Amino acid sequence: MAEQLSNKTDQVYALLEEMITFQDLAPGEAVSESQLMTRTGFGRTPVREALQRLARERMVEIHPHRGVFVAPVSVEAHFRLLELRRGLEEMAVRFATFRAQTRQKEQMLALAGELDAFTGTDVRAFGTLLKRSHAAIVEAAHNEYLQLAMAPLQALSRRFWFAHLPDVAEHLRIAADRHAHILRPVAHGDAAAAVDAALALNDYLTDLTYAALGRPGPGPG
Image 1: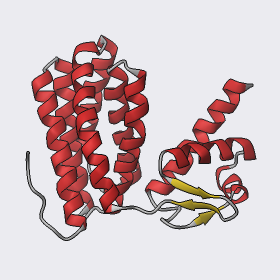
Image 2 (image 1 turned 120 degrees about the vertical axis):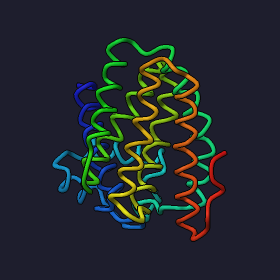
Image 3 (image 1 turned 45 degrees about the vertical axis):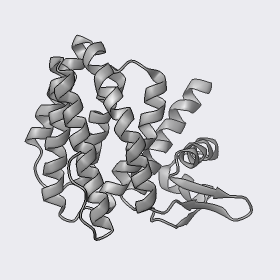
Image 4 (image 1 turned 180 degrees about the horizontal axis):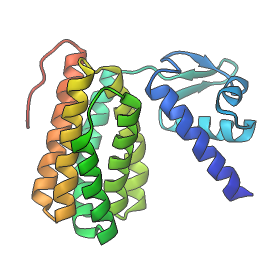
């Protein structure tokens, strides 16, 4: 029964995270458990547990006697997030380079091929591809604590990125290339190239965050 409930909670979490990422639930919007039960088709307990997880990960804010609100998207918070993500992602790609199993390497190369082939402006389809790419690296690192630390940072970063794309088609292509450039060297065991690609991705995200402020970024390094 506990495992079944956990699976339902994971499903609700995934649905709500997507709604928040693509602003079906807008920043600052008040939501209720009953409303989300209707929208997701799940019962009160998995909805409540998913909301508690989203609150821990800064996707929603739970205020006693006031209710649940979708968290705002903050430029300043995203800078702080990227500081932490930079170091953790470098660690993740190093671990993954040396620890990935054959099956995981094959999966990463297949994902890189999907990223290369991606065209168009379907942000939801691309969001799914990004999540799979992020998960492939972290899972190949074989460190559950790193996985716990990285997953919410990547989710928050995806949310910020999708909310601030100046040109959807152009930046989906840039992001596809950046992630493929991480996956391939990890799969081929080239730690130095994988780290360089991960840092280049972080530089790109930092520049995009500066652009959200209307300021030029510092560039690579």
